[in-house]
Length: 81
Image (cartoon, rainbow, N blue to C red; front, top):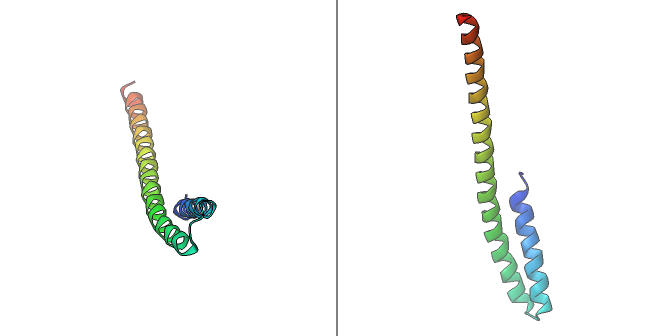
């Protein structure tokens, strides 16, 4: 998950450079497109990674809360019996 921003930006820069080359775009413009795509898709990758990590932590915390609640109910049920 840590390399997602890098891989996403690299993949998109490669795709953009290949399609630009096939279309006959000049090298200078290809370089500008690649730089812009690297920056934008790296930022997008950071955003996606952040959201996935927050979701993972939320699910992990919810599971811990449920396990704690189940444990408390089990202990409380034994005391009443």
